[in-house]
Image 1 (cartoon, rainbow, N blue to C red):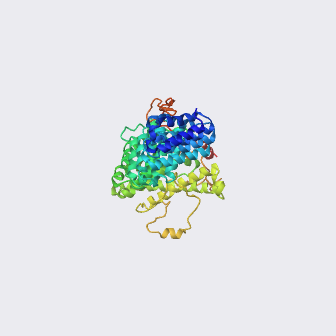
Image 2 (cartoon, rainbow, N blue to C red):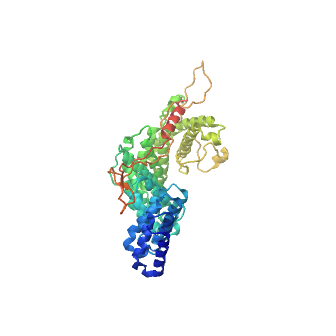
Image 3 (cartoon, rainbow, N blue to C red):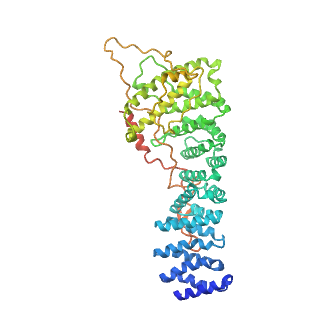
Length: 557
């Protein structure tokens, strides 16, 4: 084993030889051998091996493997120096950037904070030097590394994007887009969401929203027949549509998604299943509701009748009896919010639908039902506000109160929209945010006076004149009206946003056998088989079941 003196001597030989250092392979081999020596020899070897690496291509594998051994050394100073020196293998040539970034990516699983910082610094340096080669090396581990390395690599790329590092590197955005396109054939729902979020934070990519929408469309498989009872198909549809929606707001065309959801999915909505943990039907209906914001005149004319019919089915037939708890229990506020929102958006594109001469009788019935439903909503809103009176700050964060706030948002939205339809002629000026998106406090009321509100052009206040009269109470035992109590159970309002996650399963949206392994590859013994496969499944929201149970208990009080 070469001594410290011999290492310095060989260093002098190679340094003096300059461009002709390749004539002294024995001197370089001596440095490689020194990695098996004592602490002093290792310290020198890990610094000298990268320095003269460019002159000894025939010894490249041996040199890199020797350096990698030092990156895993038991002594912390040696390990850190070896890691810090890795980028120097690429100092004069980009030929080995792919391999060195592959190695550094594996080292992202280091637990030592200082070493992890060195690893990330080295990766960033190589990305600045050669974005295409470096990102290719990183993504080779995302594709073929074990699960922990894959997770750490995705996190690192996300940090680069959100931190703006890639924005300052020429061609980095294009290189990232190419690598992510390759990997999207083998991701979980959670990883898909992460990659789209990464692309959306890189300026050179996010400035072209149509490109991102096209990528999502490819993964959504909208050209395939919609199978309403296939959970994997539903998960894919929900996840991809959710990811595409923000880009529609930035100018990307929603035509493909809108055509699929309105023409292929909506007609089969009643066949979509629900479970204790996920109400798929409601999740899909929420997607259609949000997409309706981008409706065109053609879409409105084609589908407004169907939406109108669905809403009418949800609205109860007016009764001459006093509204009771039993009536409130049967109301599906969530579906009503969705259908009335969609009708409002489609109606804005096709206002003649409700005002057509041959629609007079239906419009009259529609208004009558809306007025009756409006009374129910008013009663429910009043009861909710009374139960939340005096609640603010931390108290509103309590589980019971959070659920009440969600229900209140839904009711407020319905009430605001139905007032537009009760105007003569129907108006489409109301602009609200769907309850599952809104963060506004529904307890906050406007400072505008009633008189000022009435002065606004085109507003006709809700009138209950056409409602059937309440039954008169019996002469004896007649008590004054009592407040409505919350119903014992009710369909609708879901408390949790759809979350498409599953860290333990992964494949290209299809069932597939295990495919990945671990290890360093190359001459270092190959990769370990770590399995894989799975489907386009998602891990359920950890709190979903408990929150839903709380919600149901709340309604039974």
